[in-house]
Image (spheres, rainbow, N blue to C red):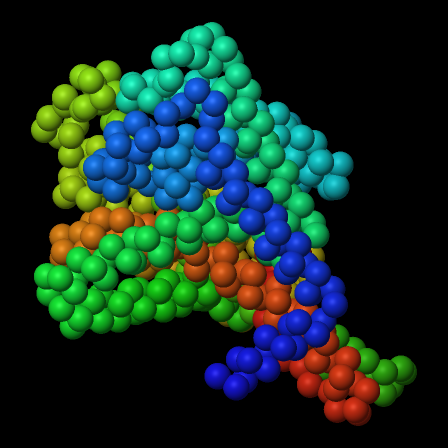
Length: 455
C-alpha cells in the first residue's frame, strides 16, 4: 500500500502527466454530463418506466451498457460513440478488400491516414443520421414523446441533436488521445461501462445478502477476480517464435572475425483479434431483434420460440450461436490482420531467419501454421468469455451485474486499463531514467522485437 501511494505521488509530481490526467478527467466529465441531458420533446419518466423491466434482459440492455445509461435516458449522447466504432470497422474491412483503401492504409503514409480519418468521420455522420431515426422510432414505440410537440419539429431537431452529440463525443475522444492519457475513443466506452457498475453491484449485494448471505457474494467476487486475471493473461499472452540474424564480420584485414548473429523473437499474440470478433458476432445477433421489431404489439415483443430466445442474450440458443460465431470470427479476423507473407518478407529484408526453417515460403508456412495453432485456444477462450454472462445468470447472478463477468464489457475494460497503465508507466520510467542517469546508475529492461510495429 505504501508503494502504491508513493507511485501516485510520483505520478502527480510529473507536470506533463499531471496535466494530461486532469485534461482527460475533464473531458470524461463532460461526456458523462451529456449522458443526462434529455432530448427535447421526450418524456424521460415514461421511457424509464417502459425500459425498466427489459433493460437488463434483452440486447437493448447491452447497448445501454456501452452508452453509460444514455440510451435509456434518451440523452443527447444516446447513441454514444458506437456509430464511430461502426464506421471505423467498415473502413478497416474496406482496407482488406478495396485496393483504394489498401493504398491509403499501406502506401500513402500520413496523408493516407488523414484521408481515412476524414472518411471515417463522414461515414460516422451518415450512420448516426440513420441510427438516429431508428432510435427515435424506438422511443415513439414506447409512447415517450410529448404529444404537445409537433412531430416534424421533433424528428428533424432530434436527429440533428443526436448526430451532433455523436460528433461531439468523437471530438472529445480525439482530444483525449492528442492531449490526454490513453486512447480517447476506448476511454469513452470504458467510462460508460464503469458508470453502470456501481448500481449493478449494489443491486447484487442487496439481492445476495437478503437471499443467500455474504458467502455467495464473496464467492461471486472471487470468481469475477479469477475471470479478470485469466482475461489479462490471454490479452497479454504471446507465442514467441525465436529468430536469429545472420552472422557478420567485424574488424579489418586478416583480423576479421565472425560474430554470432543476435537472437530475438517474433511475438504472436494469443488473442491477436482483440475484441473485434465479439463485436462482429454481436452485430449479427442484433438481426433477430430487428426482425422481432416487426412483431411488436404495444411496445411488447409478440414473437415466441426461437426468435424470442435469440432476443435474450442469456438464453441457451443465443449462447450456443454466439459462441460459434465468436470462434469463427476470431479465425477470420486473425487471418486478416496477421500476414505470414509480410513477416517472411520482413525477415528476409533484415537478413534474419527462424532457426531450422528455410527462408521464404517455408518461413511463411511455419508462421501461418503456428498462428493457426495459437489462435485455437485464444478463440475458444474468447468464446467462453463471450457467454460467461449467461453462465453467471444461470448460477443466480443478477443480469445487470452478470454482464461484467465477460463479454465485450470485460474485454474492453481489461484492454483499456492495461493500455492506459502502460502509458502512465512510460512516463514514470522516463522520469526514473533521468534520475538514475544523474546519480550515475542506469537500469533498463529488454524486450523482444516488435516486428508488427516495424512493418
